[in-house]
Image 1 (spheres, protein in one colour):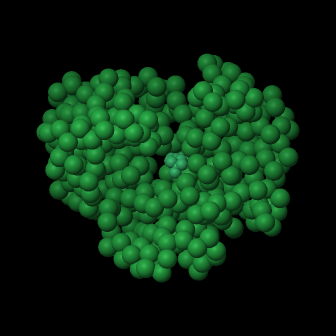
Image 2 (cartoon, rainbow, N blue to C red; image 1 turned 120 degrees about the vertical axis):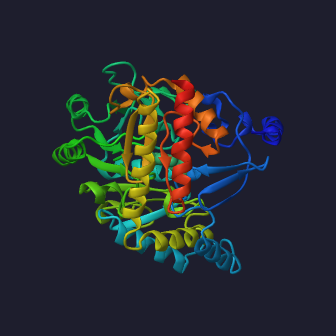
Amino acid sequence: MNHERSSFLFQQAKAAIPGGVNSPVRAFKSVGADPLFIKKASGSHIYDEDGNSFVDYVGSWGPMIAGHCHPDVIKSVQETMTSGASFGAPTVLENTLANMVIDAVPSIEMVRMVSSGTEATMSAIRLARGYTGRDKIIKFSGCYHGHADSLLVKAGSGAATFGVPDSPGVPAEVARLTLTAEYNSLDSVRKLVAENSGGIACIIVEPVAGNMGTVPPREGFLEGLREICTNEGILLIFDEVMSGFRVAYGGAQELYGITPDMTTLGKIIGGGLPVGAFGGRRDIMEKLSPSGGVYQAGTLSGNPLAMAAGIATLNIIKQPGFYEALAEKGQRVAEGIAKAARDAGYPIYSTRVGSMFCAFFSKGEVYDWPTASQCDTSAFSKYFLAMLDEGIYLAPSQFETAFISAAHSEDDIEKTIAAAAKCFKLIA
Ligand SMILES: *Cc1c(COP(=O)(O)O)cnc(C)c1O
């Protein structure tokens, strides 16, 4: 497969844009290749600048649940655009999407729109701190919540009490306030809570972890977090930027029946345009400016085009049977890939929640970051590049989730499984 033009464009990009990309994981660095420049997409497929076509399992990292270029989304955005792209004043579209979110997500009584998932989580944490009057937060190793200072922190080795920044530029003083527990380990949470009694504002968690590969919550984990938070006056924040409208219309909280105090959203609610949102209990949300004192703002928040794309997308995916059909496709492709690996004598650890799935290059179970990080990433890289050559576009990292959309066909799935059979034989 020829990637000449993409490679040329990447060389050009590197001169103008740091690392040649506007978001690091796009760079294909962890798989040792140059990224493809994408020219267009349609349904389940993306097309690069060299004219190659791929079955797409990235879906813009989650938003494209209805498939690329859904006619309803295009129509809605085009019509909205002709009335003006942005006013910086309230619009009906904002009321509509806010009410759709409130109707969809069980715990959300009020919601504020922002322009990215990062803004949503950053703002939710400020609000949790403002509401509780406490400064410390707990997150989980391997969970990603965007790139705000206090969230770019993971565990130091073992039972580190204080956070260590993941990036230069994050002040140690800020990172110190972020405590890190292990995913699926209530004991690790209880320990931090006991050591910091009365000091923790919130626990933020991906209720289905999707940023260390796909790691489902173990039975009792989310329930246990709910109980700890209720007992300790800690706010429970579900970061559903990925899982919201993905694992069920009402997100992971609907799927598992757990009610967080606050929820962050992004990705799907923008239908491919930049949208994030955070919402929750009314008494918490009313502490937000201008009804309360916790400041948060945005020039393009609730942007009409983004609202229009979100509304159109939600109208597509709220149809009866949508998630059942999607989960069935997810199951066929994830099980097909796992079987292809077994048949090739190279068993993997396969995880899936609805239309999110992952093939971990691990012989053992993956249930947290320490177990995920033991995967054979060099074997994954070979698999990734071989799959790309077969016309299958996966996320260029072992620690990402694959997404299937409503536009993926039976043919796409068969082609994917056949490609996987070939690629696992290559690396076995
Ligand atoms: C993608 C993601 C974010 C960040 O969203 P951006 O729109 O990239 O800022 C936050 N949390 C989770 C769980 C995500 O998957």
